[in-house]
Each structure stands twice: as C-alpha cells, then as structure tokens.
Image 1 (tube, rainbow, N blue to C red):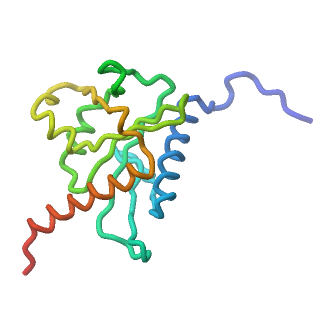
Image 2 (cartoon, helix red, strand yellow):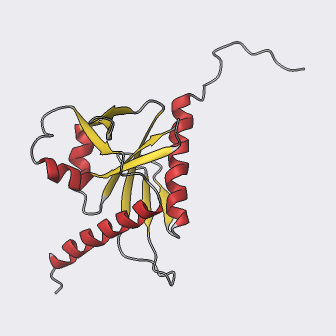
Image 3 (cartoon, helix red, strand yellow):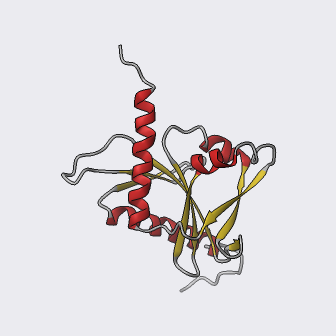
Length: 173
C-alpha cells in the first residue's frame, strides 16, 4: 500500500537547481565538442569546472582553465542591450584575479539556452581599481562573447598566454 505523503516532507528540486545543472551541461558540451576534457569540482569555493586541452595528436597540454558558472532565467541587459550584468561577490573576484591560470566567468541564460563569458583577470585589469571596496561587484559580460566552440578555442589561447608569462618568470636551477 502506498504511503500518503504530506506536503513539505521532502526536499524540493528548485528551478535554480535545474538551470545550474543545465549550465554545467552546456559548458561541458562545448569543451567536449573541441576534444577537450572537463573535471567538475565537488567542493566549490569559486571554481566549478576545470578544462584540460589536448593537441591534435591527443597529447595533453600544460595548464588548465578554471570556470565559474552562473545561471538565470532573467538576464539583466545593460549597455543598450549589448551586455548582461552579473552581481558577483568581491571575495570571489579577489580570489580569481590572483589565479595563475585563466578564470572564465560564464552566465548561462536558461530561457534562450545561451551562455556568455568573460576572462576575469583581463576584465579586472582593464578596469584598474574601479572594483575594490564593495561586497558585491557588477560584471558586464558582452553579448558578443557567446560561449561556442570558437570561444573555447580562444579561451585555450588565453591559457597559452598565461603559461608563456609564467614560464618567462621562472628560472630553473
């Protein structure tokens, strides 16, 4: 005999949970389509995914790219509809800007099944000191930064530039 359940006895899967999972699926698929691999971070302290890349011969390349994903059903358009605004904790920005590998912030628009990205370290550097001091920061992600295969390849190039900088600063004994 089926047991009658009272409302409120079980945890609920909310819309926020669903679109968060959809955002991971969307980004992972773009990476996999490029032949790259992706690792999900279980204990999320500001990074959700790590992307690893490979040569055309299948050899792993040095470095990785870190991704932080956000999802919404209602992106807030700004700059005459040319960008989406995303509020982010200053503590996250402060962490990401000092990472040696690129950190990519992705906003997934669940209603349109689209995602947009920004390279956090470059974004922060372009603003100078305008971000500091607040608990929350508004990041403006250009709509032209759609996350597709081309963007994933471009992000790989960002990782290569970061590696070049790191290698030039290292002296081996």
